[in-house]
Length: 466
View 1 (spheres, rainbow, N blue to C red):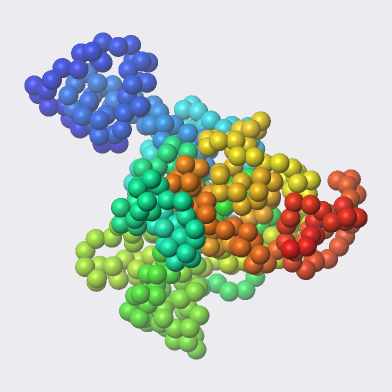
View 2: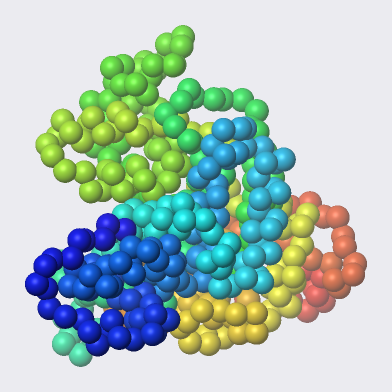
């Protein structure tokens, strides 16, 4: 945080200056940075306090901005440093980090304390949040809310519009996010960035094909059960958004990324498809690889200034080949999810099997005694618990798990027919045993569709008729 030097003759801030420091601190951490800088500029006393207590004030700002997501922000910071930036990220490196991280998600909702963090960590987290994440949040919100309007208009759904009767206007969308909506998007972004740090491309590098450092089924095993299913969908919504942006950019400018690009410097011998981004098959790899670098390259390309040549230059700098460990969950076969769940049945899977109720408990943060899934998730599964994840890209395109019920209602998104989407989902049968103590070793079964009732005599299976 740059603290502006106070101006001689600036007006007095004696009312704040006279407060005890703890009260003064609590006032300052609730100000946005422009107001805080203005305060420091107006008062030499406050300027000295802000400068002296910069880590404490920035930590307070982070707590205000991120809330419980501070746990994820700190995990992102930790994985942005050695050993994750210097060694092969195999199971022996990733798993010992994710296990305590998972415990912290359950037990340390408030995140690390000020005493747990170095000044370097606080400044790094604050800088990443304010310069990279926060601007993308606004762009993501505008894009996804625009997609709600487009979906409703093109699909000709019957919609109850707001009182003015005009429906949402893409060019004049209201994007003033509620605290809960902002927190969901922030959480998805930090968890996407963490995933990229653990499994994504670290730099342009050389394309690597062959045996992965971590097998696909093991990657799913490491990340699948970290979060509640709707929170996992928050992360997948951000991953989908990053992919869509890079897909648009790479297909638009692909003809200009050819053998002169540093992307192809280490591709030897020359591949049969030639050293061109627009060549068949190449662009898919590069889209996935570049998206897997996380939010910094995405921010750079979203907010790039200058002319066309400057954009091409930036693409030369950020485009990357994928790693074998990075899974694009919007494109992975559902077989892998069901293979993992059959072999590693969790309490969340049993909740789904028992058809446990999961009502809408209002918008807000969940805790262990009161889960608060978003309205669209409850509508989708008709008030029953489901542990399914990454199953329908048409839902991801409008960020369905990000929005409060009021926004779902006011935009008309509640009228999108979820049941029609479910009919086309390629889901498989977990075929649970008749009790949690008994287990049967069954193979993967044909796709099925969920319903509220189990078939007579089939208490050992989740399979129902569509």
